[in-house]
Length: 305
Image (cartoon, helix red, strand yellow):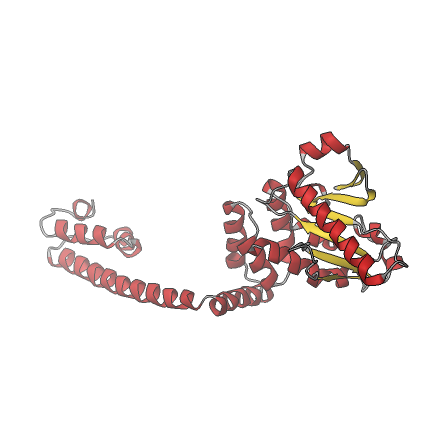
């Protein structure tokens, strides 16, 4: 399982109890004895009565004590074969529960497949019924098989575990919306693992830099510290770049001084605008070219061409 899937599972694990007020929790599943058949995770429902006020799909857990959840993130297959394998894992879990709990257990194991969108093949073959924004019942299992189309879900804090499965522009929209609502560590995980556009990732990183709010600046500092802790080589790279920049700035400073000295000795007047231009130039090759021209130039403007 890749890092994006782990991030999505971790979001479910961290958010489910908080969102549902303890009425449901996420559990990593045991391996089912069928060579290796293992779903992404379970929603274990302890207080179904407390879920009625939450938006779908949470409210659909009122009549069950467990739900198999399959997460299909950007790049994962959502074709018929992928769906059939998910249903096989659901059926294997149902057999496992029947073995564990004996003949007295007559339940049915629901499955929710969470993906960015409803695939065309499923819409054509099964005619799923939309009962809430982004939520579809898929026959023949009906209420036992829900397809959650994350791109269609509303932006709500209590739906964030499902919203991480968004893709494309819908993911970019979600990323912009959720970034100020979440902890720095979570935002860092989102930026690292979810396949949002490069422009939005850079936009969110720039937003961290532009603010002057002390609280947000503290969050930015925390993100930076997390990065340094997770990637020690980043500190080494920053130190090396700092040394290179310091060396370059030293050479620029000496070149500017030499240019001003040559212009002064040749009695070429340096206006405040010219001096500011020299100070603002950060290209060493340009400063050195001006210095060479200053030796023979007949005017300051000619030297600074």
